[in-house]
Length: 106
Image (cartoon, rainbow, N blue to C red; front, side):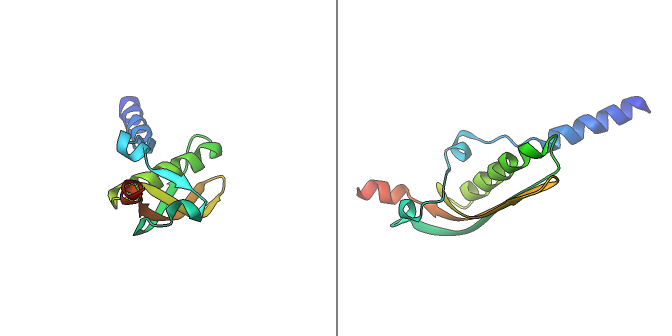
């Protein structure tokens, strides 16, 4: 019974980690609307995190989900519109943009 409990606990820990691909890590987060002028709007994006080892890790985890979701939409930049956290959850919201064509024009 102890082995089953240990196994389930380890599975839980693996499920809580959020690792990003290099492409997902490259997604830029900004609060400056000037940086997304001329970029293609891809849509609204959300990152939510629930329960981490410490509450201080929740915003980081939320941002990782935000980057992952933005990348899945074809975006390389997120304009943050909302972020809130508590001791058990964190939510980040933003607008996803593809600014790669903007860079080519410049």
